[in-house]
Image (cartoon, rainbow, N blue to C red; front, side, top):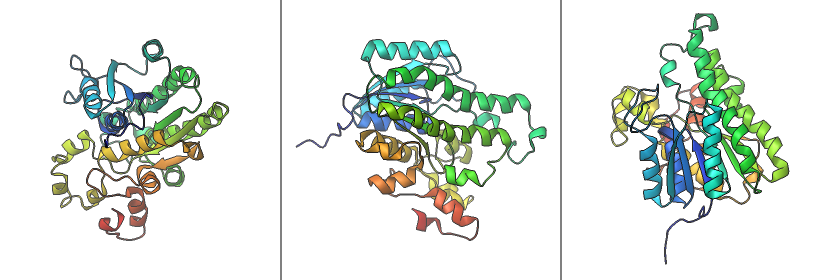
Length: 308
């Protein structure tokens, strides 16, 4: 008897922004379930994006998807360029004739944050702030506008808007500065609006946030690896509640495989919430609830172990 996961065999997925972090993990977990996954980004083995990291490429992501059991296809794409996105969607249509899952994970704005958190709007670098909105909002709008006609061709499509923070958390808190706040709240509203538009096609749109994500970039910042990440907890105790990208990847794969996922339509979700619903764990077997821990920390001193 085989234990191979083929729950998404025959499904065609597009993960926009799959070079690293959550996007890469989502693509790999969809591949683990047997899906065909088109992965996009701006960093390739020949060219590095403005993020400035040559250590992760979309070609590598595609290879990881294939090694996991799916079929990974890397397509270099700048999602700010409608022509490039049209070419991408046209290729998917020609090669597969359908699109079942669209994951809007494009971001790449970490290098714009720097010391900008906590500053007033008029103290910020305007060009950097507007670039943040381009990367985190315009890219998602361009991609949805272009890809959704293919997705609605077959009923039951899924759109996942990846962001930072749940609707409940963000609604009563100002997220660091105006531009970041706008960039991370817009996908939540996009999921709500797209959910309304997709309803007549049997489609589902959700916003999804990881917790404190141990992305490749975050690990580099703290001078640790995925194997040694706990070494950073001594200096940054709250890092104990962090989660690997696998966690949010498994959340998307579980959503995509759920025939009753429409019950989530228009909702804002977290990786921890979906772990409780679907029963999956992070790579280490734990179920971290970063947002629960963060909220508890506003009025007390919670133990991270109680939220894993």
